[in-house]
Every structure is written in C-alpha cells, then in structure tokens.
Length: 263
Image (cartoon, one colour):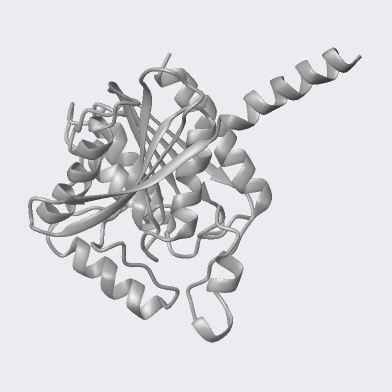
C-alpha cells in the first residue's frame, strides 16, 4: 500500500512539474518602435509546435491579451501576444486607447511592420514550427490580423474576434493566402451591416477561403469578461459587453479551425 501511494505521489509530482512557461521578450520594429511581447508555451511538449500571434484589443497589451496567449499555450501552441503600440502600453480609458490606436494605424506600412516584427519574434522561438503559423486578434487586433491576411503574409490562418472589418487596402484576387475565420457579434453596434456586406463582397471577389460566423445576442467585446466594466460607468466606454455563450462558441470554433489548418 505504501509503495502504491509513493508511486501515485511521484506521478502527480511529475504532472505538476509541467507548466505553462511565460516570459516577456523585448523587440523592435523597423520603424524604430521598441516593443514588449508576452510569450507562452507548455514545457511538457517536446519539440516545435504551431505558433500563434495574439493581437490585443484597442486597450493595448493588457492582462486579457496575455491570458489568451496562455490559453493557446495550454492547447499546445507556441503563442506570442504582440505589442502594437510600443512599450507594452495599455489603458482602461477609451480616449487614451483611441489615441494609441489612431497613432498605430495612421501609417499602414508602420502597422504592417509592427505586426511583422512580432511574427518574426514568434518564428525565432525554438518551440515554434516556422512553417505552421497563425494569428488571432480581438477588436482592433481582429482588424490587424485580417489586414495581415489581405497582404498575403505566410500564415496558415487568421481568426478575428469582434474585429474591425473595414480597410483602406482591400484584398485583390489571389492576394489572400491564409484561411480566415471571423467571429462576429450579431448585436455589435460598432460594425454596421454595410461593413459586414462590404467585407463579404471583398472576400468573395478576392477568392478568399473564409467563414463568417454571426453570434446571436453578442455585442462588441463579447469574449472579454471585463467588457461590461470597461463599457460602462466612469470609463464612458463604447457599447460593449461580455457574452459567455458567444465567448465559448467562438473559442470552440477557433480550436476546430486550427485543428484543420494545422493538420
């Protein structure tokens, strides 16, 4: 009996030693912006595995974006939450967030360079298979990953969660190499029906392989449990809100999507 208990304790100890490892990685974009990425992986997995870039909401590289990197690591991916604003900036005040976002997007070439810099850092990690890369993004970040797909970056796929759909540089026939999954809230007041129609038309004309999922009763920000707090009260934020069912459904869709594109 004692021997049995000892073996059980040894086995449990071995399991608890495996953990999600995280670290901050400083890097720099070609525009000179110094950035801080948040990297996560499961050290129980040996060898390279698919890599996923996580692009934050317009609030910046906050705890939510980092949590999603850890979630992806828990699924067996090499995940890097990248920094699109520089210096790891983040805020809970909409006016500041809007200023950060507008600065990052004022030059599309700079925005693309910042995404590429993060992607390059992910590829350089020994846990990453550089031939199996994807990106996910939330809100502002959803628009960033869709633009990466429009530009034909070497990604197997991208997933946009309550992301911006409009663009100043539409996809052209044959330009989209990545498969696309869009998880959209049916009650998202920040994305108009015309935006949705224009996006679908753009993707159809470009011949893109995409899936557009409209989630009932979901507002903008539906994946973030902090959305209700950030969208009301003293913050005076936009019309956003968390929706547990939509959050879980969209994450399940993403998992199935990744299983398919990485197989």
